Length: 78
Image 1 (tube, one colour):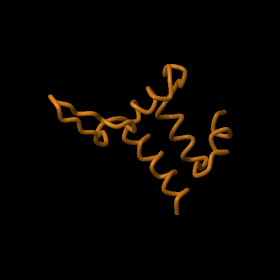
Image 2: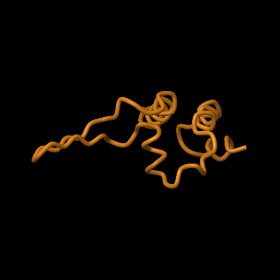
Image 3: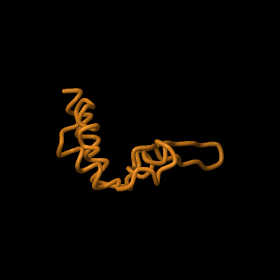
Image 4: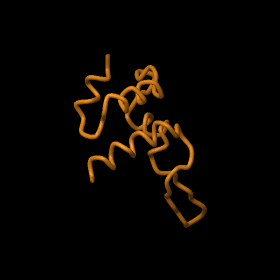
């Protein structure tokens, strides 16, 4: 159902769209795109202590979803 809409985006194949839908499930459970990005582990992690602040990539999140998104991005930039 949503696969056809997702495949209109550059870098998203039918199989990748199916993976997204399988991993995300009911998309309306996310209030915002930011919450979906956090679920996928794509938003940066912030570490702060006193005066020092660091950001890094999260090592947690939905691995399959994060891998699929990264694969689509890599396809676009080849």
